[in-house]
Image (tube, rainbow, N blue to C red; front, side, top):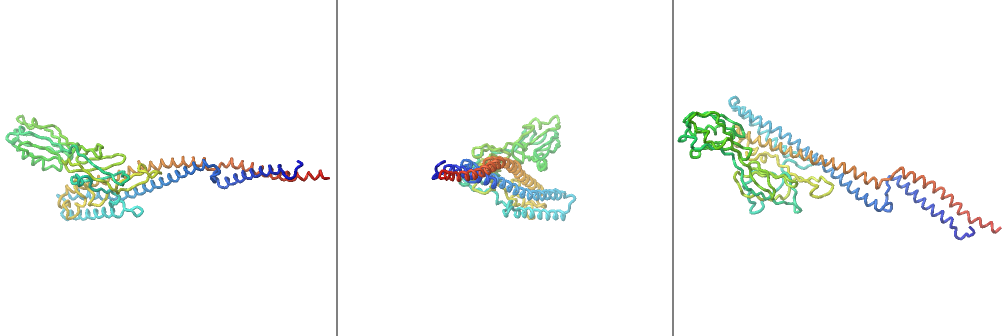
Length: 477
C-alpha cells in the first residue's frame, strides 16, 4: 500500500466491523427479550403471520373465559333449581299426606296447606333473587320474547303452552315461526256396540278389566246391569285408570282423558256367562290415541299428544295446542334469551342463545294448571281438589327437572367440551406463534459468541489497517 488518501483496508475493516456490530446487537436484543422478531425489519413475513396467530390466541383465550363464565352461570342456576326441586317434592309429600282423610284431621290439613303456602312463597323468592353478576336468572328476564305474526297472530289463541328453549335470530334480530297442523291429536277410543247388550242391559254376568295410562281396575257385573251402571262404575275410578265412559245411544264408549300414542284403553274380558254378548261386540282388545301431526317452518315436528316439538341446530321449542285444533300457529320471536359467545369469532354459528323460563308459581305448570293454584283460596288448595293439586305438582316437578337436564346437557356437552377443544386449539396456536416469533436461545447464544469474537478481531484488524499508511514514511527517509 503506497497510497494514503484512501485507506481501503480501513474501509473494508470498518464495514466488516459494522456488520459484526449489527449481528452482535441483534443477538443481544433477541437474548434480552427472548423474541426472534422485535421489529418488522427482523422478519416482515414472520411478523404478519405471528400477529395473525396472536389475534387467534387472544380470541381463543377470550372464548375460553366466556365459556367458563357461562358454565359458572349455569351452575348457579342449577343450584337454585335444585332447591326448587326439593321444595316441590316437599309439596308433593304434603299433598299425599293430606289425602289420607280417614286419619288426618282438618287441622292437620290446614297445617299442611300453610306449609305449602310457605313453600310456594319460597319458590317465588328463589325465582326473584337468583342472580349472577347482578343479572337475574330465573325471573323470566332470560326467556325469549315473542309477538303475534301473520293474520292477527293466527292460532295463538289455541296455544295452551309455548316454550322456546333455543333459537338463532336473523340479522334483524327476529325469526318468524309458523306451525301448520296437518292432523290433530286424538284420544284412544274403544267401544262395546249395542249388540253387546239386550235393550241396554247385560245378557249375562261379566268380569272385565279396564286399563289405561294411569293404571287398571277390575269390574264385575251381573246379568241385567245397564250401560249406565257400567258408565258410572268406570267413571268412579277415572283417576285410577285415566279412562272415562259414556253411553252413546246404547253404545258403551271408553275414552282416555289424555291424547296421543302414549294414551291407551285396554279392555280384557276375564270371564263371561255363556249367554253373554259383551266380549263379542267390543271393537278391539286395545285402542291407542294419535299424536298431533305438524310441521314448523317446513320441518316435521315430533308430536306427543297435543304437544309438538322441534329440535334443530338453530331452533328448539315446544308448543301445546288445544285438543282438536287445526288452526295454524304463527308468531315472531323478536328477542330475549341468554346469548353465550362460545367461539373465538363473533358469528352466529359460534354463539348459542337459550331461553330460561320464569320459575314464578304463576308461570310453572301447563295443561293441568299452574302451581299458584295450590295456594290457599285457589281452586287446587288441599280442601278443594287434592287430585288436581297432585297432577299440577307432578307436571311442575317434571318441568323443573327438564329445565335442569337441558341446562346440564348444555354445560356438559357444549360448554365443557368447548373449553376442552379451545384449550387444545390455544396450545397449538401458541406453539405455532412461538416457533415463528420466539428466539432460539441455543442458536442466539452461539451467534452472540461468534459476534463477540468477530467484533474483537475486527477492532484489532481496524487498528492495524489504520496504522498501515504510516509505513509510507519509511520511503521518505
